[in-house]
Length: 237
Image 1 (cartoon, rainbow, N blue to C red):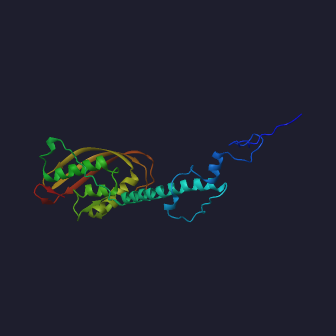
Image 2: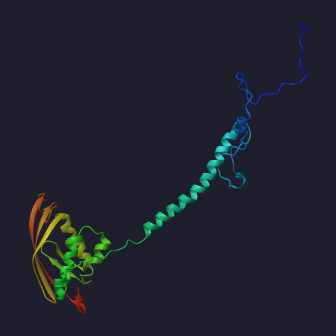
Image 3: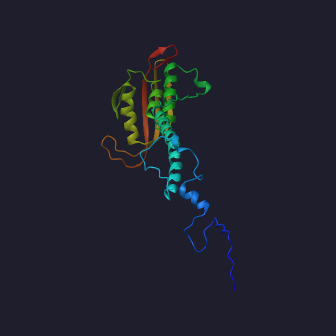
């Protein structure tokens, strides 16, 4: 029996045989050597103090992933810095102060000056007291309180200036009676003076003048007297 051998060399398969895992396919070769699967020119990117890029063998896979990560960081970091700068700038911006509009009914628009001032002052306190921030509250009450204000009270002491009144009567009343519903019963006034009698249904929730808070609702009777000094025609504090 004779055997005939061909003179041509068999063409090598591009993929490894099932029995071998040594010879890689062309696709696997590209992954290992970091070929066309990782696009973009990293030569223009600034150097960073991070692990060096490696071009040979299986380290090419890490090289490809690291190039992509580095490009992402170079884009993300400036954006994050800009966002932080915007947040810091917004925190430094002055808080807008809103002056409350009493929106009085037409029949109150012809009241004498002192009575008109106190009506608006009382309306603001009943509508916005304890709700506005300190700066907004101060800007609103200073429309009705003179800089040299003198405030005298049986229960809350004597205070000067609008800020003193806020630290004294306003703050101490709020600590003792955190919730109050006011009902104004009597209101008199002319161009120079005004007086009111008001009842308040209040929650006595804090100690007051050494008396332990009973933690219950009580009825308060409040009588106020005001002296108003005219500053411009038709308006005063």
